[in-house]
Image (tube, rainbow, N blue to C red; front, side, top):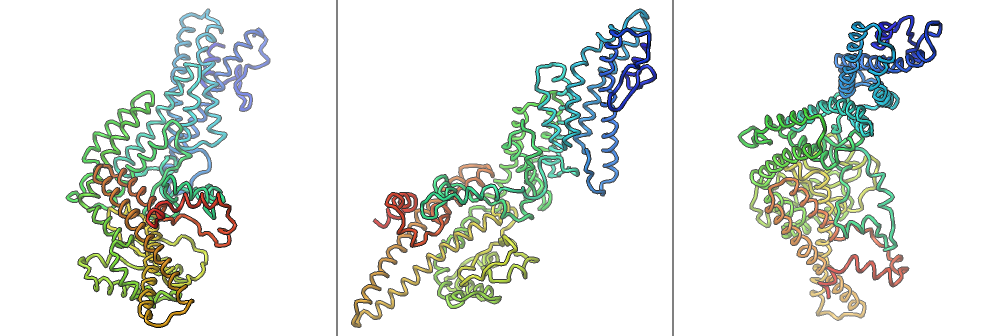
Length: 609
C-alpha cells in the first residue's frame, strides 16, 4: 500500500487511492484493514496529491496552449488563459514542484531500506508541503477564475507572496522571478531596440494612444465658482499654470505608444513606467527614421551591450529590487535624454525653431501681420469659401515680400489654414504635415467670418516633431488667433483715429464727441493690453524658456520647460476664461466683482494705472 500511496501522490491514482475530479484524491471506503486514524492520515496526504495533480494539469494545459498559440499567430486572440507570462508562471510552478518530487523519491528509498516505516513517517516528511500547496493553489485558482493576463500575473503573485509563512513566500518569490524574466526580455527589446514584442497584449506599454481621461474630467471642468463663468479647472490653471489636457488631440501617427496602466504592477511606480515609455519611443523613432549614423548616431551612444548585460544581471537576482531597477532605468533615460538634447539643440537648432514659432505664431514679426491685415481684410470679413485659403496665403506671401522677409526657405514651411464648412470631409484623406487634425467629425456651424476660421500650420522637421506635436501646435494656434484679433482691433481703432483727424476741422456734434471719447477709451485699453501681452507675457516667458533650455542637457527638462511656457501663455493671456455675459456682470455682488478683478486683472491694471 505504501507504493500505491507514493504513486498516487505522484499523480498516478489506482484502486486503493481513487481520483474524482470534484473531490480529488481519496482513500477507498471499502478497505477493512485500515484503522479510522490511518484513513484520516491518508486522506490528509491525499490532499497533497490532489493539489499536485491539479498543478500538473494546469501546467500541461497552459504550456501546451501557449505552444499552440505561437504556431498560429494569425488566428484571433483566444478568450481563455494564454500568453508568455502564463507560460513563465507555469515554469516557476514546475520548479516549485521539484522539491516535492524529490521528497517522494527520498521516501521511496527510505521505505525500501526499512520496510517497518509507517504512514506517519510519510506524513512527517511531507508536512512541509501541507501549508505550501494550498497557498499556491489559491494563486492558481485566482488566475483561472479571474482570467488574469500578462503583467497582471506579476501583481497577483506579488500580493500573495507577502505573508507570514516563509515556505510560501520563498516559493512564490521563485515563481515571481521566473515571470520577471519575461518582463526583462520585453524591457530589453523595447528600451534598447525600440521593439514592442507583445503579440498577446501583455506588456504595460501598448501601441496607440491611451484611452479615457476626457469624460472623467468633465465634471471638474464644468464646476462653476460663481465668478462670472470662471470654472474651478480654469481658475486652477490660472493659479497653478497647468497644461490643458492634450492627450485626445494627439495624432495617432505621432502618439504611437502609451502606457497600459491596468497591466502595470503596483510595485513599479508610474514615474518609472513613464521613463520606460520615453526611452522606448525615442529609440523606436530613431530606428524607424534611420537618418544615418553620420547624423544621429546611436541614441544609446553604443552602450546597448552594457545596458543589456545590466538588465540580464537584474534578471538573475532572486528578489526584485526597485532601487536597482530604477537606477538602471534612470541611467538609460539620462543617456537617451542627453543625446536627444544634443540632436535637438545643437544639430536641429531648436532655439532658431522657437524663434520662428515666436515670430509667426506669437506675432513676433508684427510688421508682417500688420501688412497682412490690410491685404486680407476684404477676404476674411465674410464667411470663408473653398478659395479663401488660397487667397489668404497669396496675401501672406505678398505681406512677407513687402516687409523684405530675408529667409526664402521659411515661407514654404508656413501655411495659413481656413476652416470653412465642409472642409473636413474633403481633406480627411490628406492632412498637411504639422497641421492640426480635425477634433471631431460632427457637423459644425459655419464660421461667421474668415478671421474666426483662420489658423496657421507649420511643417515641423524631424526630430522636432516629438516636441512640436499637433496638440502643441493647436495650442499655439489658439494663442495666434487671440493675438491676431487684438492686433486687428488695435489696427481698426488706429484707422478710426485717422478718420477722426481728417474730420477735426469740421464742426462736431455732441454725438461725435461721445464717439471720440469711446474710441479714446477703447484705444487706451487695447494699447495697454497689447503691451502687456507682448512684453510682460510673451517676451518675459520666452526669455525664461531660453534660459531653461541653455541651463540643462536633458530633453525631458526641455519638454517640461516648453509645456510650462505654453501653459503660462494660455493662463496669463486670459484665454482660458469663459466669456462673461454683460447681464451677468450687473447681477454680481460687490465681493464677486472684487474676486474676479483680483484673479484676472492685476497685471493689466498695473499698466493702465
